Structures are given as C-alpha cells and as structure tokens.
Length: 191
Image 1 (cartoon, helix red, strand yellow):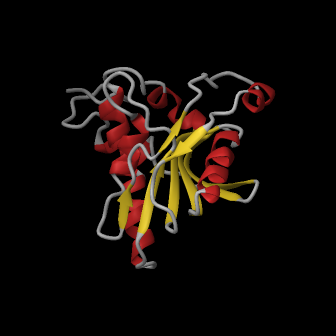
Image 2 (tube, rainbow, N blue to C red):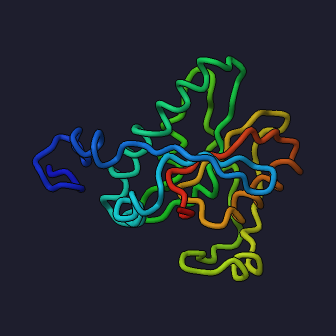
C-alpha cells in the first residue's frame, strides 16, 4: 500500500513520516455560543484527507485520523478525570458503507468513556457544504436524541465551519437532560 499523502510505500494509509511532519496537530479552541470547540487541525492542513469521507479510502483515512487525534486526547483527558464520560457523534449517518463520525467516536472508547453511537441523528439531510450562514440558519438539522439523560457528554464532529450544527446539537442535548462538556472536531475552517 502507499501513503495517501506522499505516495511512498507504507503499511498504513498515512505513513509515520507524514504523521509526524505533515499532520502534526495544531490544537485550537473556539467558543461558539456557550460551547467550547477543540479542533486538532486547521481545515486547510487536512482538506484533501477530509474530502475522502464519502469515498472508499475515506474509511481508512478517517480511522487513521481518529487514532492520531481522538484516541490520544481521550486517554489524556480521562487520566485527570475519572468520572464516566459519554461520547456523542453528530449525526452518525451511514453513507458509502460507514459513518466517518462514528469512526472518530469509536476511537474514543475506554474504560471511562463510552460512545453512544447513532444517539443524535438529524432528520434534515440537507447538505451544508459550501453554503453560507443564512442557509444554515434557514435549514436546521432538526436533531433527535435517543440516548441516556443525566450524563456528561463530549460532542464529536469532523469539521466546524460556522458552529451552527454544534450549537443546535448542544441545545437538543441540554433539553434532553445531558451535560455537554465541550466538542471535539478534527478541523476548524476558521483560520
């Protein structure tokens, strides 16, 4: 197999050299409303990889990204916080045979963190890609939460653009009796 980034022979979809040099995390935090959103990369650094999410190779790429980012993050987080944490992915809708957000949440499973797969699903399947803020406001996702209440949750999504989706998800979770600690995304479009 070849590395998706540099095309050199590799046992992994992203070789160790690219992981350490090209895709070194650049963690940033953005506050959207009352929600803190932690992102591991700027969108421009990962754009080619993120655009594979609905292609066959996207499964392996998102799985690799999850193990490079989400997995180490949750292990470090639970070292300092031993309460039970639940992980809720935003709309883990299966397309092209897998859900890219579910791959991110699955990597966060530990003794003290449990993914609640497909517990927060959107009724509205409108595509936000390339759309402006007004379009997003006029076409909410209309989330339905079918998970536990009275729990502490970390929200997970792949990209934050305007933050409207994360805010809507947070609102639905709070109305369902869930304490949203913060959100994690792979990339932030805001530079």
